[in-house]
Length: 345
Image (tube, rainbow, N blue to C red; front, side, top):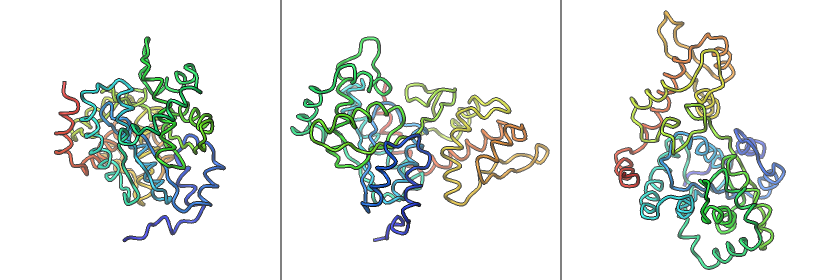
């Protein structure tokens, strides 16, 4: 068995890996204490098989890679019941689960993770146990409707006439931390209210609060966050090279302006991977337009974009190539077949 590289990292290196590119950790003192006391901490990330996974998932996928490098055992909860609570039709639930169970491991491997300490858990296999549901009911007697609604509002599709299922969602997510036997939860900043609800209420039913690690949300290609429900804001993980080019070409990117989804994606994902591999972000262009440019850090690219030394179209072409290169590592034939079944109209 290959010895984990994490064993060679000191405390500061492990902590920096955990912290980098996060929006918030509740709390940093607790994560420092955990790293000092535990050689193999356990963290989980939950993803509900609802809409099609897109390149926005790369951001948390990269954080999973960081945590694996830092010596964590990482559990990915494929939360099929949570998908149903968030209005995924029950009759397609198993097909959506099958698709996520196949594509998420492919995505994480394509990013370059060592998956030796990566584990996948099917939500319904854990969440339908009598003990688990008993604790969900306990929490339901302690947490107000107002607090559940507030916690779920940024994650669940509540609508004007919200269903009861949306209020159950955060209670189950709180119990997941206990029944997955983890030290931490990883999620986007849209999960913050649910995470805080868990920290504030798990102790009321006899369990320890967990550490919460949050990643920022990437803007979408049209200026909003990437969304599974908005095809114009996302690039699906199964897009072909030509489709990736077309979508990137349509992305918002005003010359001299760095406040857009393309630059955010480069900073939070592409440049991080390049730096880890000791590679540069390369922009190919004809000599008459300035020739090839190579960037070792995001700030240099940002400076050239702001000064209009580097044109948005050149950046877009480079980003499209990098995305397609990563997506090409995935077994798309099998995944396309599963996708057709899971998302048939």
